[in-house]
Length: 254
Image (cartoon, rainbow, N blue to C red; front, top):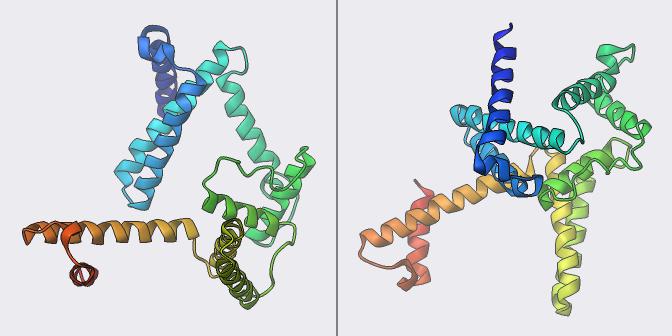
């Protein structure tokens, strides 16, 4: 037997044994697993962000375990079999890649994406946006919706037009702030964020990745400030803003 197939079957067998014999594993449901699956996915995302290949390998294993866990529960509930999961994704990939497994011609990746969305609509999807999970983080969801809309031609032509829209939305936000209308401020702030996500796409920047890198940068610098304050025998909260600014600027050079 192929070593990869053998390893996969061993993991499936282990999952079956744990489900039948382990009190904790026997107790789990799709609802109790959901939050743990999300956590494992974020741990994988962290490893990817950090370019931690050993971590990526380990976290992929955890995610794979969760896939087998859900498949096992699906079997117990007489909803589906693991083979249906595997066969289903294989068929989907073949059907949605007619330029590989059929006679469709494409020139570039944009043609591939457009064909993908057209095929999904033929499969019964009522909207190109229906494939965007409702529970996605807002920033990621905005990006995915914009990418989907682009595939049917709903897209600005020039980057300058996108930036003009950003400036327009910032102007409307300023007006909302001046009105002190909290509801309107929230609405306009959301429009500014959505427009900035769009601009990020046009200049080739992943907004989620960019924001996460800034989060990490802030975390590193702030923790440096805390450490330096402690080294000086002080509590960061007792320092003046000017003193903290000095430490912040020092942290930026590290």
